[in-house]
Amino acid sequence: MSVLLLALAAGAVVGLALGALGGGGSVLAVPALIYLLGFTPVAATTASLIIVTATSVTALLAHARDGNVQWRTGSLFAMAGILPAIAAGNLAGSVPEALLTAAFAMVAILAALRMLGRRHVHDRQGAVRPSRAAAVGSGLGAVTGFLGVGGGFLAVPALVSVLGLRMRAAVGTSLLVITVNSMAALAGRADTLDGLKWEIIGPFAGAAILGAWDGRRLSARVSSGLLQRVFAFVLLAVAAFMLVDAAV
Image (cartoon, rainbow, N blue to C red):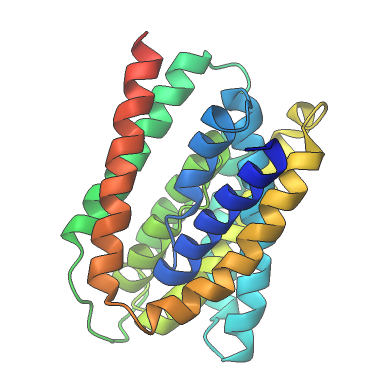
């Protein structure tokens, strides 16, 4: 299979997961870029941020039309993550590749376990706790900057439990947070943009955007619990492979 077809196929899977689950799909982008498309870990995490940003902006516009984005709340949450995202983005380029791969694998395991253990969350609106919101927003920004993942699998439950948003608003608002954090992380990784394989990133991002629309339709037809379990086991397998690769 040619590199272009691999990029299109991988992008479609990433977008499908993002559209169907509202987060977590970007965790597949980095290993796909490394093991299928020949990127180094640093280049892969930077390319993943570009792909995540493009896909998140597209999905954000769709959710905004439906009125599911809390702009003020999301902006305040995202602002707490801007500086950590920039700082972590700067740090990522100086970290040994094996350590970066292992750290990414651990986050993939966390995402998988969260999906396997996720319970139904009732719609509710509670009081916002600014100190916790700032702490969680900062942590999410650091994860985004260091590992090149959007962090939707962390942002959605955080917006529900910490800021008290209803689930639909949390999903839409998380896309605003992901977009801001990803752009900040890219600013911190400016020196890693040179030499990226744009002829691969472009088709990958395009397929991810289209896949996200299909994922939204798939989520209406297939049980979300089944989708989460399948995706979680895929993530666990990918994480195990990356840990073995980092140890070799």
